[in-house]
Length: 371
Image 1: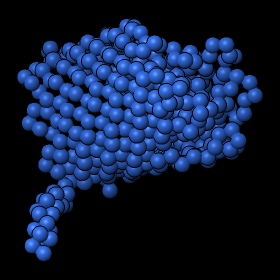
Image 2 (image 1 turned 135 degrees about the vertical axis):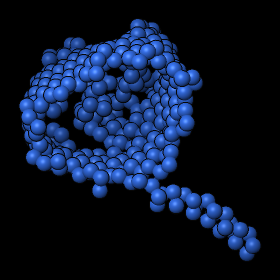
Image 3 (image 1 turned 90 degrees about the vertical axis):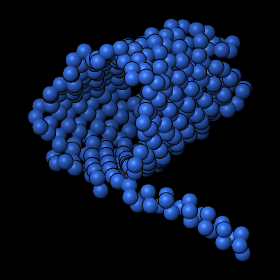
Image 4 (image 1 turned 135 degrees about the horizontal axis):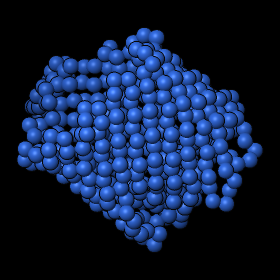
């Protein structure tokens, strides 16, 4: 009995301060519920025998943020529910997205942890952005990351981020993998407008099955500069290299540039980058990407915009993917807005005819912040 009583006292000592901190925290939450109806003329991006579908998507997302003293706790709960007019082409889906993060501010920096579990279609950007050509399936992605940042002097800062990813697929042609990466960055405030930085990244790729892929390492040093050209215009440019181990590895130069303009009515960005990413086809894939985004406020509640993107993948199935879209949105109140969009996308693949699709969509979004 004395041991049991001591255990209860010790538990109370640990729980009560934490409970008091939680009750004293400043809690804020946001609910976003977009509901879309889309027609896709070729969701599988087939070069022949295309079949179009109409899909209805509702994707509620709930975010809860608690701030107490120097700590911030963030909880995210999301669900992507889709219904297809032809399940023989694209199946119905219910994809969860759950995340939990913690961040602490210190006198000279910060550190924190983030855990996330996400399911998505292999036809979505999470897979297509790696240059993989696939059919309709499911990707299950588990992510755990930790970050740390510390001001060393008045002008220089050291930061580190470690990330673990575990991807699994229900399609036999795709290879599940585990990826462990670490990026170390040093940043120096050269002037009020310019920051120079250098970083070094190391990643380890482990395939789920060694029959289709082999383990490999990636090493990526880079140097760059961030420059505030004006109050509305900023730029970020970096140059580096990546060396991948293994029989299919090798080295090549990498780099990128990002431009951002924020005006009274107009917003615009341009990015161009050469990078190496983990691929569901096995190993690391080399990607060249260019993207431009522009939008303009016609009034206080009406906005129009256009996006364009081009991607060249040099993975096991080399291909290029390009998309062009225009859209217009109207805000009816602080809680409701409506968006009409039109997108054209095209994929070019070696030894295959070109494939294209047109997507027309209408999205009604409900937002309710600070419940």
